[in-house]
Length: 311
Ligand SMILES: [Zn+2]
Image (cartoon, rainbow, N blue to C red):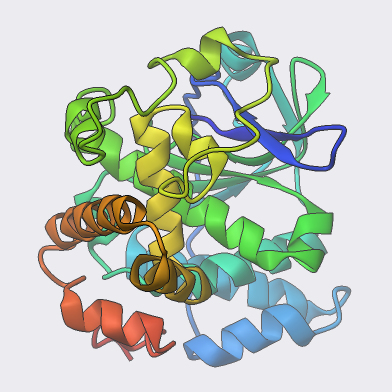
């Protein structure tokens, strides 16, 4: 669930452990929004980080997200004495103002792909950035669970500058976990996803395998119906990996290509069933707004601010 990712010695990424269960709390600020979406976004990326305008941009971005999606933004450790470290062993620091502007920019770009009520309807109320994250003393990147209503992003300046798609992936992956959890399916939907394989086999590592195998490497190779070897660890992770792939147009297009062109019919069939299952989840959680037309538009890069009728 928590999906902190650790860069291993090969430069790859592994994610661990549901055990790092978080309970977060703090109080956010609400700002008045003076400017439209694109001007706030441009300001986050372009203005001088020492300027008053820069502070205003950050405030307006936080306000935009709060006012339109009812989501509060936090940075750094929550002000809950002892609990955070005690439960999870997670430690992190605040983002600098510059880093926060980059993180907020990414959230501004990705959150607009969801209908405004999506977050409140699905129990995700906060986004928390942590920097320099360590779990039990080891460096971690990626995200952490949304099962307490908080979508956590372990910020990496290097990732944010070099590979923004990775952090986009984290955002959608963790949000999927949060909605999955809120819907009561996170712990109880394994059979449906096992059955999608229709292979008479056990497609995943054991549930909890990731926790019990903490420190072990994920499989280095996996069947093509896993979009990422990490998805093979257990059904909830497979779902979250698929979710982030369909929410990012480039990855979504790649998935469609794979479904349509794989030489292996079994692979095509399993991918198609998982694809349909994920779209069904999003349709349910969005009250039908993320429908076939929505996916067509997303694949064509036509889903951005205003898509759901906001101005
Ligand atoms: Zn995950």
